[in-house]
Image (cartoon, rainbow, N blue to C red; front, side):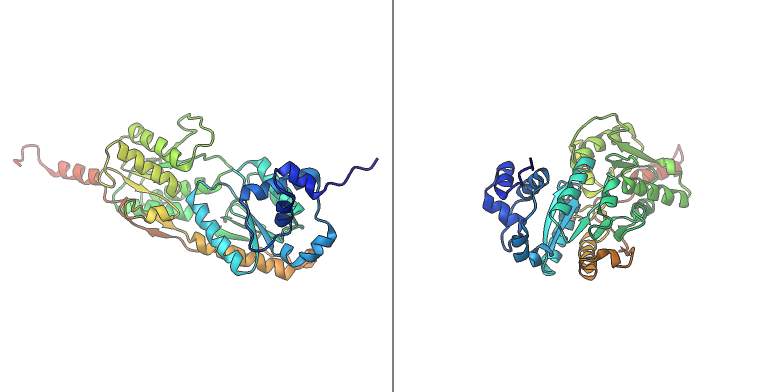
Length: 374
């Protein structure tokens, strides 16, 4: 006996929404917005029930369907991705397309589900805001949908990316701290496993700058949840910075500066130091990376690196839409390409970094003779 074909009512019941909501989401009605969670529940239900939009209704909405893009980001807790998504959303709208955003939490199973949703929803193209942990994701998209990734240039070699040079970011930060006289610093980061290449490259860039300045790269200590044997599931970047920042200054009393792997980690570090009654930058200098809105606030005034996330987001949208519109339906006849666009990062020096006062005090003490009268 043939299996009964799923209906939109079946999808609505499984997703816990009305049939009209299912219809509006699947047909991409203009000027009607639903929360990302609702859209995801509906698309999850479609995948589970193997539901397809009836061809007659597809015909009425072909143009809208062909202008539907999907994006996958790891988290909403990092302001870097919020700013990136804002720029992407504005550019998508300006180009006459619609966008659905999926958060994966860097979970390989969720990343695979994103592929299912993008293919079942017949998205015109896909934006990846980071290199997926699940290595099969890119393979599954290949030959089916145009894809553009926003990630480090060392992570993906055979596809179109708007690239970031994470090693260069680390080098820029370390050079700034070296000029201020800092010779022993801590790099505070979340996990530094092989899945998180940009974080490791930032450390590598700092070590390279120290070596070039004839300072031992071992003068950069790393402080991570793993190195401190802290097992915390779902800890945010801010919480990580707060926790590890306090540990770092106690464990390494000779450090004079701390670098957060991103602005949110650095904000946590600054709050942890303030809670211990340290003054920034008199006692410790602190650097972030991303130049998010919160870093620019006068009360925060964080030294960080601007790597032009908004510009990269807009460029990614334009590149993806060009691939969509040039490729048309017959994507296999489109010439293979590997477009790579990079914006040169810039250090933004603010009030959270200053001269190494401990170094100056030590040098002054060494020049004083033991019997000199003050």
